[in-house]
Length: 132
Image 1 (cartoon, rainbow, N blue to C red):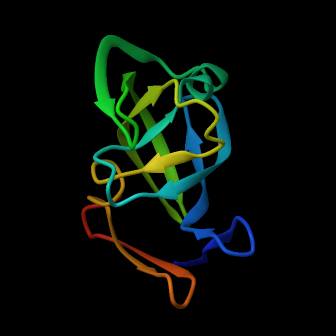
Image 2: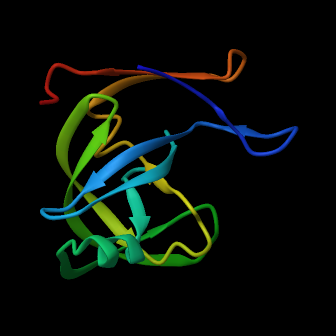
């Protein structure tokens, strides 16, 4: 699967793609940033509420690019990337004004081989054999 980088401005492009995130009864087409520096997949907690995703009450905390700790909650979802659908656990948190989710090491990179070519402005994503 090959996707173009998303042009943010005349000088900035990012590896942002559209995926489908599903609960048991609802789904959303949602933009996500492919972030090899992120340990986990992270989505805004409002998305969990909108889709009726059951989140665990046990909190987890992490730090992003800022120094402040962010508190999140784990939830199980189905992600569809291209023609591949798989179930994984993600973190739902208050991530401010981000209009996109984040695909990180656990939950994304452990299911796909990913090549980011800034020069060509393309993202190549190939499913690993362990993905259903």
